[in-house]
Length: 111
Image: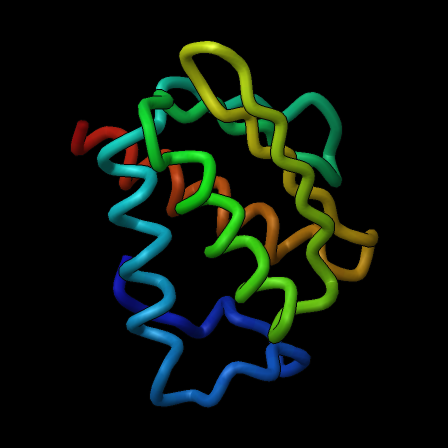
């Protein structure tokens, strides 16, 4: 899924930097995704395999993403063997969450 047309106009990340950020997310999901669930239409829950440094990596990426895409709400919850990442959006951004879920699942299948 190399097409970034699903990225909304409200994303403040410069266009030329978007492919690099998407690649960071894709790599995280390809390396760490153990499960993906959609408990509600406006929320996505990702379980990421944990080991030293993963929580910090996730928190760094989430902080940078929050800086340019304020329509996402991220909640990071570490546990002994994983990091749970909840991603929520307002109804206006449900299609963006749909696209992110599809992209996440595709990247996770590479694992």
